[in-house]
Every structure is written in C-alpha cells, then in structure tokens.
Length: 245
Image (cartoon, rainbow, N blue to C red):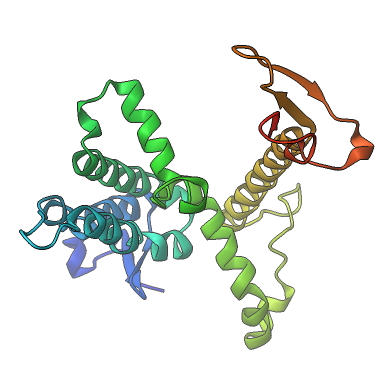
C-alpha cells in the first residue's frame, strides 16, 4: 500500500491518491478532480477539429470533423469508466459531455437554436448511427455499465489466479455481523440500476410492439392495441402506409 502520511509529493501531509495503470486510485474527491483535469487536456484538440474547413477540391471537412469527434475525442474517457468506480467518474463524464456537446453544436451550427432545439439536436446526436444519431455516446449514461462490465469480465479470472479472492463474495450485502467493502457496495448499486433500466427498456419496447398507429384518415390518427397472442409488430399488419410502428 502507498504511504499515507509524510510523503514528499504531499508536502509532508497526506497522500490522497496514486496512479495505477493510468487510472487514479485513492480519495474520491482527489481522483475525481484529477480525472476532470485529464478530460480537459484530452479534449483540447476539439478546438482544432472545429476549425477544419473544406479545400477548393475537397469538401469533406464536416465528415472528417464528425469522424474525429466520434472515434477519437468521444472515446477518450472509456478506459477510465471501466477502471474507476462511478462515484469517481461522474464529474469527469459530465465535463466530457459538456465539451463534446459544445463542439457538436459549433460544427453543425445548432448553437444558434433555442435551448430546447439544441437539447433535441444533442439527444439525437447521442443515439447510435443505426438509430439516426451520430454515435456521440453520453459518458455519463454508460459509466455504470462500463464499471459493471469490467467486473463481469475480470472477476472470474482474478479468482482463478489468486486463491484468497475465491473466498470473497462481491454480491454479499452488509449485515449486523458483516460490513461489505464500499467498492463492492457501489458495484451492487450500479448493477441494480442497470437491471431497472433494462426492465424499463423491455417494457417500452413491448409497448411499441403492441401499439398500432393508423394514419389512413387524412389529418387524423388513432391507435389500438394488438392482442398479445398475435405476437407481431404493428408494421406487419395491413399494408403500408396504413400502419406504422
């Protein structure tokens, strides 16, 4: 374990944290502040991306801007979401989202819109490309999934490699005679939240699958429910353009 008092880098005081394989480990506040600083440094190239312009014989500047922002800038925080608990990454994820959103609005010109219009444009840009978005995934939205995913990936190999880990139950909850480690408590909370999100999405899609919208009457629309036993989507009923999902 690193020394906690009298360390030269702490000016003789308390050492709040260290870096391990690039990630920050230690006091939550210190780790969060360090990660926010790193986000701002990592996203400094956004200013240069925004300034890209078409050449006389080459007019792909905006495509290049979007590719650089999506595949390079917007992915810089993923490693830290996977290696640091959500309590340490929330502020960095929010700052990351803010900087990427600002660059997006400047690139597409939506900054001239109303706050509501800007918000709608950003929400669509956050969607995957196959759903009509730009793939600018919100880091704040995926931080819990990234953290849980890491543990799901590495916990079994860790237990195989290090025998003492085999007696550790990361799913056990604190009780009168047992105090679970805070890192595992946070993991349990993140996993529970993901399950709730999954249930909500499943119910929403089930509703989409059962709801039929009839646009056959000019200027009017009505909806009706499909019997559950049909097991088919609304767009499979009738002939287009009468029915849409």
